Amino acid sequence: MSQSPFFSIIIPTYNRQKLIADTISSVLNQTFSDFEIIIVDDGSTDNTKTFIEKTFQDKVRLVSIPNSERGKARNTGTAIAKGKYIYFLDSDDLIYRTHLQEAFSFIQNHNQPEWIFQEYEFLNKLTRRKSPIQYDRETAIKSLVSEGNFMSCHGVFLRKDIADAHPFEENREMAGSEDYALWLRLAARYPLLINHKVTSALVQHDDRSVFNFAPEKLIKRKELMLKTVLDDKEVQSQFGTFMPALKSNTYSYISLHLAMIKSKRRSISYFIKSLKASPGSILNRRSRAILKHLIS
Image (cartoon, rainbow, N blue to C red):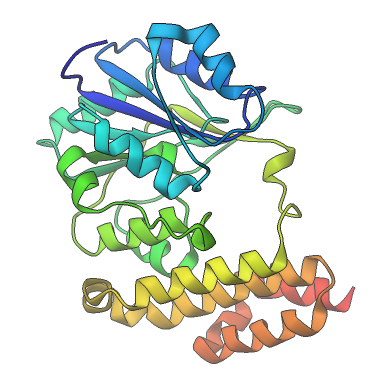
Protein backbone atom coordinates (compact mmCIF):
# COMPACT_ATOMS: atom_id res chain seq x y z
CA MET A 1 0.00 0.00 0.00
CA SER A 2 1.16 3.53 -0.83
CA GLN A 3 2.37 5.80 1.98
CA SER A 4 0.33 8.67 0.54
CA PRO A 5 -2.57 7.05 -1.33
CA PHE A 6 -5.24 8.95 -3.20
CA PHE A 7 -8.06 7.07 -1.46
CA SER A 8 -8.40 5.78 2.08
CA ILE A 9 -11.09 3.08 2.12
CA ILE A 10 -12.51 2.87 5.64
CA ILE A 11 -14.57 -0.22 6.42
CA PRO A 12 -16.22 -0.30 9.87
CA THR A 13 -17.34 -3.79 10.82
CA TYR A 14 -19.19 -5.57 13.59
CA ASN A 15 -19.83 -9.32 13.47
CA ARG A 16 -19.59 -9.52 9.68
CA GLN A 17 -17.31 -12.55 9.27
CA LYS A 18 -19.69 -14.13 6.74
CA LEU A 19 -19.97 -11.01 4.58
CA ILE A 20 -16.80 -8.95 4.85
CA ALA A 21 -14.59 -11.13 2.61
CA ASP A 22 -16.64 -10.23 -0.47
CA THR A 23 -16.47 -6.55 0.46
CA ILE A 24 -12.69 -6.50 0.94
CA SER A 25 -12.15 -8.56 -2.21
CA SER A 26 -14.22 -6.08 -4.22
CA VAL A 27 -11.77 -3.37 -3.16
CA LEU A 28 -8.66 -5.44 -3.85
CA ASN A 29 -9.97 -6.21 -7.35
CA GLN A 30 -10.11 -2.55 -8.41
CA THR A 31 -8.55 -1.41 -11.67
CA PHE A 32 -7.31 1.66 -9.75
CA SER A 33 -4.57 0.78 -7.27
CA ASP A 34 -3.64 3.95 -5.37
CA PHE A 35 -5.53 3.29 -2.15
CA GLU A 36 -5.24 1.94 1.37
CA ILE A 37 -7.81 -0.18 3.21
CA ILE A 38 -8.49 0.54 6.88
CA ILE A 39 -10.70 -1.96 8.70
CA VAL A 40 -12.12 -0.73 12.01
CA ASP A 41 -13.42 -3.67 14.03
CA ASP A 42 -16.10 -2.22 16.29
CA GLY A 43 -15.83 -4.75 19.12
CA SER A 44 -16.96 -7.82 17.15
CA THR A 45 -17.91 -10.83 19.26
CA ASP A 46 -17.60 -13.37 16.45
CA ASN A 47 -14.38 -14.24 14.61
CA THR A 48 -14.38 -11.22 12.29
CA LYS A 49 -11.07 -9.84 13.57
CA THR A 50 -9.27 -13.21 13.49
CA PHE A 51 -10.66 -13.94 10.03
CA ILE A 52 -9.40 -10.64 8.62
CA GLU A 53 -5.95 -11.09 10.18
CA LYS A 54 -5.64 -14.61 8.79
CA THR A 55 -7.13 -14.00 5.35
CA PHE A 56 -5.94 -10.54 4.36
CA GLN A 57 -2.86 -9.99 6.56
CA ASP A 58 -0.76 -7.09 5.21
CA LYS A 59 -3.33 -6.13 2.56
CA VAL A 60 -5.29 -4.07 5.09
CA ARG A 61 -4.70 -1.96 8.19
CA LEU A 62 -6.78 -3.43 11.00
CA VAL A 63 -7.76 -1.35 14.03
CA SER A 64 -9.84 -2.65 16.94
CA ILE A 65 -11.95 -0.49 19.25
CA PRO A 66 -14.52 -1.28 21.98
CA ASN A 67 -18.02 -1.41 20.55
CA SER A 68 -18.97 2.21 19.98
CA GLU A 69 -21.20 2.09 16.87
CA ARG A 70 -20.42 3.16 13.33
CA GLY A 71 -19.96 6.90 13.81
CA LYS A 72 -17.03 6.38 16.18
CA ALA A 73 -15.64 3.57 14.00
CA ARG A 74 -15.64 5.75 10.88
CA ASN A 75 -14.07 8.68 12.74
CA THR A 76 -11.37 6.37 14.10
CA GLY A 77 -10.50 5.33 10.55
CA THR A 78 -10.47 8.92 9.33
CA ALA A 79 -8.07 9.97 12.10
CA ILE A 80 -5.36 7.56 10.90
CA ALA A 81 -6.10 7.77 7.18
CA LYS A 82 -3.32 8.93 4.84
CA GLY A 83 -5.39 9.39 1.70
CA LYS A 84 -6.35 12.59 -0.08
CA TYR A 85 -9.97 11.41 -0.17
CA ILE A 86 -11.88 9.37 2.40
CA TYR A 87 -14.32 6.70 1.32
CA PHE A 88 -16.56 4.82 3.77
CA LEU A 89 -17.61 1.33 2.72
CA ASP A 90 -19.90 -0.77 4.88
CA SER A 91 -18.69 -4.30 5.45
CA ASP A 92 -21.63 -5.85 3.61
CA ASP A 93 -21.58 -3.76 0.42
CA LEU A 94 -19.70 -4.17 -2.86
CA ILE A 95 -17.85 -1.93 -5.28
CA TYR A 96 -17.40 -2.91 -8.92
CA ARG A 97 -13.96 -3.06 -10.56
CA THR A 98 -13.97 0.45 -12.03
CA HIS A 99 -15.50 2.19 -9.00
CA LEU A 100 -12.36 3.93 -7.74
CA GLN A 101 -11.11 4.74 -11.24
CA GLU A 102 -14.42 6.43 -12.08
CA ALA A 103 -14.32 8.40 -8.84
CA PHE A 104 -10.69 9.42 -9.38
CA SER A 105 -11.38 10.63 -12.93
CA PHE A 106 -14.47 12.54 -11.83
CA ILE A 107 -12.61 14.19 -8.94
CA GLN A 108 -9.69 15.19 -11.16
CA ASN A 109 -12.02 16.54 -13.86
CA HIS A 110 -13.83 18.69 -11.29
CA ASN A 111 -10.82 20.28 -9.56
CA GLN A 112 -10.83 18.05 -6.47
CA PRO A 113 -14.14 19.16 -4.91
CA GLU A 114 -14.96 18.92 -1.21
CA TRP A 115 -17.21 15.93 -1.76
CA ILE A 116 -18.93 13.93 -4.44
CA PHE A 117 -21.70 11.36 -4.66
CA GLN A 118 -21.30 8.46 -7.07
CA GLU A 119 -24.56 6.69 -7.84
CA TYR A 120 -25.07 3.06 -6.90
CA GLU A 121 -27.65 0.31 -7.13
CA PHE A 122 -29.48 -2.02 -4.78
CA LEU A 123 -28.52 -5.66 -5.24
CA ASN A 124 -30.72 -8.52 -4.07
CA LYS A 125 -28.37 -11.51 -3.96
CA LEU A 126 -31.21 -14.02 -4.00
CA THR A 127 -32.96 -12.70 -7.10
CA ARG A 128 -29.91 -10.93 -8.61
CA ARG A 129 -32.24 -8.01 -9.19
CA LYS A 130 -30.52 -4.64 -9.50
CA SER A 131 -32.24 -1.30 -8.88
CA PRO A 132 -30.15 1.81 -9.61
CA ILE A 133 -30.31 4.95 -7.46
CA GLN A 134 -30.23 7.98 -9.74
CA TYR A 135 -30.84 11.65 -8.97
CA ASP A 136 -30.78 14.78 -11.05
CA ARG A 137 -28.04 17.15 -9.91
CA GLU A 138 -30.36 20.15 -9.79
CA THR A 139 -32.93 18.48 -7.53
CA ALA A 140 -30.70 16.20 -5.45
CA ILE A 141 -30.28 18.58 -2.51
CA LYS A 142 -33.99 19.34 -2.32
CA SER A 143 -34.66 15.59 -2.35
CA LEU A 144 -32.04 14.97 0.33
CA VAL A 145 -33.51 17.57 2.67
CA SER A 146 -37.21 17.07 2.10
CA GLU A 147 -37.56 13.44 1.03
CA GLY A 148 -34.92 11.61 3.07
CA ASN A 149 -31.47 10.08 2.78
CA PHE A 150 -30.78 8.53 -0.62
CA MET A 151 -27.01 8.69 -0.09
CA SER A 152 -25.58 5.47 1.28
CA CYS A 153 -22.03 5.90 2.59
CA HIS A 154 -20.53 3.84 -0.20
CA GLY A 155 -21.61 6.46 -2.71
CA VAL A 156 -19.83 9.34 -0.96
CA PHE A 157 -16.22 10.50 -1.29
CA LEU A 158 -14.95 13.22 1.09
CA ARG A 159 -11.79 15.22 0.74
CA LYS A 160 -9.60 14.51 3.79
CA ASP A 161 -9.68 18.06 5.16
CA ILE A 162 -13.47 18.05 4.96
CA ALA A 163 -13.76 14.66 6.68
CA ASP A 164 -11.45 15.88 9.45
CA ALA A 165 -13.43 19.09 9.95
CA HIS A 166 -16.83 17.39 9.88
CA PRO A 167 -16.81 14.04 11.71
CA PHE A 168 -19.80 11.77 12.16
CA GLU A 169 -21.89 12.15 15.32
CA GLU A 170 -20.70 9.51 17.79
CA ASN A 171 -23.82 9.33 19.95
CA ARG A 172 -24.69 5.65 19.65
CA GLU A 173 -28.38 6.45 20.12
CA MET A 174 -28.25 8.13 16.71
CA ALA A 175 -26.59 5.13 15.00
CA GLY A 176 -28.25 4.57 11.65
CA SER A 177 -28.97 8.25 11.05
CA GLU A 178 -25.53 9.75 11.73
CA ASP A 179 -24.71 9.65 8.03
CA TYR A 180 -27.86 11.54 7.05
CA ALA A 181 -27.13 14.25 9.63
CA LEU A 182 -23.61 14.63 8.22
CA TRP A 183 -24.76 14.82 4.60
CA LEU A 184 -27.20 17.60 5.49
CA ARG A 185 -24.51 19.56 7.33
CA LEU A 186 -22.12 19.16 4.40
CA ALA A 187 -24.77 20.04 1.82
CA ALA A 188 -25.38 23.32 3.65
CA ARG A 189 -21.70 24.22 3.35
CA TYR A 190 -20.32 22.76 0.11
CA PRO A 191 -21.63 22.09 -3.41
CA LEU A 192 -22.49 18.44 -3.98
CA LEU A 193 -21.29 17.04 -7.30
CA ILE A 194 -22.90 13.85 -8.61
CA ASN A 195 -21.29 11.25 -10.83
CA HIS A 196 -24.00 9.30 -12.64
CA LYS A 197 -21.80 6.26 -13.27
CA VAL A 198 -23.25 3.35 -11.25
CA THR A 199 -20.25 1.41 -9.97
CA SER A 200 -21.22 -0.05 -6.58
CA ALA A 201 -24.01 -1.93 -4.85
CA LEU A 202 -25.86 -1.80 -1.57
CA VAL A 203 -26.46 -5.47 -0.85
CA GLN A 204 -29.87 -6.38 0.53
CA HIS A 205 -29.89 -9.15 3.13
CA ASP A 206 -31.89 -10.24 6.18
CA ASP A 207 -30.14 -7.88 8.60
CA ARG A 208 -31.33 -4.97 6.46
CA SER A 209 -34.97 -5.99 6.58
CA VAL A 210 -37.36 -3.10 7.19
CA PHE A 211 -38.89 -5.18 9.98
CA ASN A 212 -35.56 -5.64 11.75
CA PHE A 213 -35.72 -2.69 14.16
CA ALA A 214 -36.47 -1.84 17.79
CA PRO A 215 -39.25 0.78 17.86
CA GLU A 216 -37.89 2.83 20.77
CA LYS A 217 -34.40 2.96 19.28
CA LEU A 218 -35.75 3.99 15.88
CA ILE A 219 -37.80 6.81 17.39
CA LYS A 220 -34.87 8.00 19.49
CA ARG A 221 -32.38 8.05 16.62
CA LYS A 222 -34.70 9.81 14.19
CA GLU A 223 -35.63 12.47 16.74
CA LEU A 224 -31.97 12.96 17.69
CA MET A 225 -31.05 13.30 14.03
CA LEU A 226 -33.77 15.90 13.54
CA LYS A 227 -32.66 17.91 16.58
CA THR A 228 -29.01 17.79 15.49
CA VAL A 229 -29.88 19.13 12.06
CA LEU A 230 -32.31 21.77 13.31
CA ASP A 231 -29.67 23.05 15.75
CA ASP A 232 -27.20 23.64 12.91
CA LYS A 233 -27.31 27.34 12.00
CA GLU A 234 -25.86 26.80 8.54
CA VAL A 235 -28.51 24.19 7.72
CA GLN A 236 -31.21 26.58 8.90
CA SER A 237 -29.72 29.39 6.83
CA GLN A 238 -29.42 27.37 3.62
CA PHE A 239 -32.45 25.09 3.87
CA GLY A 240 -34.88 26.94 6.14
CA THR A 241 -37.72 26.72 3.63
CA PHE A 242 -37.33 22.93 3.53
CA MET A 243 -37.43 22.41 7.31
CA PRO A 244 -41.18 21.69 7.48
CA ALA A 245 -40.68 18.99 4.85
CA LEU A 246 -37.71 17.57 6.78
CA LYS A 247 -39.78 17.39 9.96
CA SER A 248 -42.70 15.85 8.12
CA ASN A 249 -40.50 13.27 6.44
CA THR A 250 -38.90 12.29 9.77
CA TYR A 251 -42.22 11.87 11.54
CA SER A 252 -43.82 9.99 8.66
CA TYR A 253 -40.83 7.62 8.55
CA ILE A 254 -41.42 6.79 12.22
CA SER A 255 -45.17 6.50 11.64
CA LEU A 256 -44.77 4.06 8.76
CA HIS A 257 -42.43 1.78 10.69
CA LEU A 258 -44.78 1.77 13.67
CA ALA A 259 -47.72 1.02 11.40
CA MET A 260 -45.87 -1.93 9.87
CA ILE A 261 -45.54 -3.58 13.29
CA LYS A 262 -49.16 -2.79 14.15
CA SER A 263 -48.37 -0.15 16.76
CA LYS A 264 -51.29 1.81 15.40
CA ARG A 265 -51.91 4.33 18.17
CA ARG A 266 -48.33 5.56 18.17
CA SER A 267 -48.22 5.46 14.39
CA ILE A 268 -51.25 7.75 14.22
CA SER A 269 -49.62 10.15 16.70
CA TYR A 270 -46.53 10.55 14.51
CA PHE A 271 -48.63 10.68 11.36
CA ILE A 272 -50.49 13.65 12.80
CA LYS A 273 -47.15 15.32 13.62
CA SER A 274 -46.09 14.76 10.03
CA LEU A 275 -49.23 16.35 8.64
CA LYS A 276 -48.99 19.32 11.01
CA ALA A 277 -45.44 19.98 9.82
CA SER A 278 -46.43 19.74 6.16
CA PRO A 279 -50.17 19.32 5.42
CA GLY A 280 -49.49 18.67 1.75
CA SER A 281 -47.66 15.46 2.64
CA ILE A 282 -51.04 13.74 2.94
CA LEU A 283 -50.85 13.30 -0.83
CA ASN A 284 -47.45 11.62 -0.98
CA ARG A 285 -46.64 7.96 -1.43
CA ARG A 286 -45.55 7.33 2.16
CA SER A 287 -48.77 8.73 3.58
CA ARG A 288 -50.72 6.33 1.39
CA ALA A 289 -48.57 3.47 2.68
CA ILE A 290 -49.17 4.53 6.29
CA LEU A 291 -52.93 4.65 5.77
CA LYS A 292 -52.87 1.27 4.06
CA HIS A 293 -51.12 -0.32 7.05
CA LEU A 294 -53.37 1.45 9.55
CA ILE A 295 -56.60 0.18 8.00
CA SER A 296 -55.40 -3.35 7.25
